[in-house]
Length: 150
Ligand SMILES: Cc1cc2nc3c(=O)[nH]c(=O)nc-3n(C[C@H](O)[C@H](O)[C@H](O)COP(=O)(O)O)c2cc1C
Image 1 (cartoon, rainbow, N blue to C red):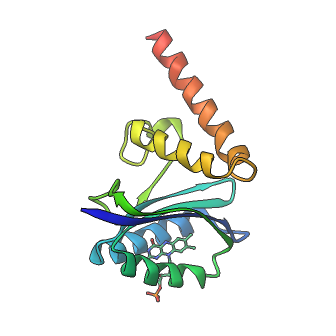
Image 2 (image 1 turned 45 degrees about the vertical axis):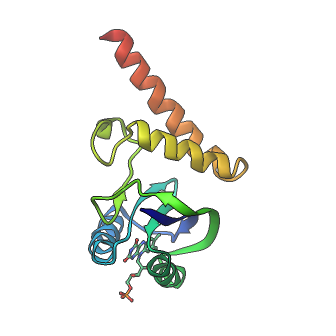
């Protein structure tokens, strides 16, 4: 079944810490799972990237809540799709990580996540690419070096 997908970026408020992010994702996981919403969220250099997918009306209601949230600002639309195949079905919200230690884990870089991040970069070359491209490139070259060594 196809779903609605919405992708945006926003700026985390100054002082937003890892423990705040953990609490946010925990809440999102429960709320979203109860409403048939799934997705993924990444926090990189103080900027959120979030993918939401599910029934359009439910995603719209959630987006209204997120827009009013004072833990971030400057929400900027990146992409939407009315007939998207669900990518993150099992979990209400996956916290994505560009860290080497998370490679291969559900929240770490795998082929699907890589594809999504490449997509996100392609939506905005000026704002997004300078933030996501360097850590992604560094991670990929570390992985390559690992493979060569093995
Ligand atoms: C970047 C960002 C992403 C968020 N994503 C979600 C989400 O996916 N699901 C969710 O329930 N809340 C999310 N929230 C929290 C909501 O903005 C809001 O705090 C939450 O829905 C609680 O609202 P309520 O007290 O009216 O239920 C997010 C907040 C931020 C700052």
